[in-house]
Image (cartoon, rainbow over all chains, first blue to last red; front, side):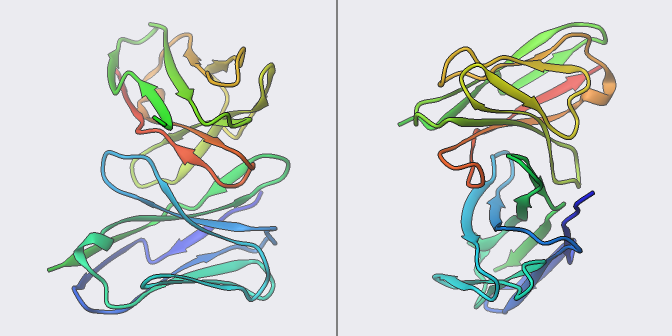
Length: 110
Length: 111
């Protein structure tokens, strides 16, 4: 059974701090996606990483896919209160199925 | 575009009742999905569809049924509601199977 483990589960930081959250698996994924979910809403796709070692940047967010395509990280520079939310990673689980990690809940204090 | 819409937003059911959660998308996406999200957990795939007339089971299909008669609509049916089905249900669609657009969710409580 493929699993995606995310760490930390919960993170509370001050505005302006940097942070990194992780998504790890023992399985190889053809691609991984990162989503952000705000309370009471559905997840919103942030990025897809496909190639081992790939790095993608989205303003202050930097996403990296591990060389072996088993793990990924999300780094946020100078976090802002608007970054608060649940960050989910997701990957293909065979066929057209997608599995999700349990998420990292981020709270950025002003 | 409205994107992915879901109705109702909230619902309380009694044990044994039935209901249909509605999902529609106006983006002409072939792929559609139903997930449930329990507190502190990620999303679990219930059913998915790769096109009109084609559906398949996900990780947690027991107690649910789906149909896909059109590209736009993908309703989820609960036949005999149980407390274990208390959850937030999300519908999603995608133009490619791995990049999904989610609806706002339906919060269901079974008492």
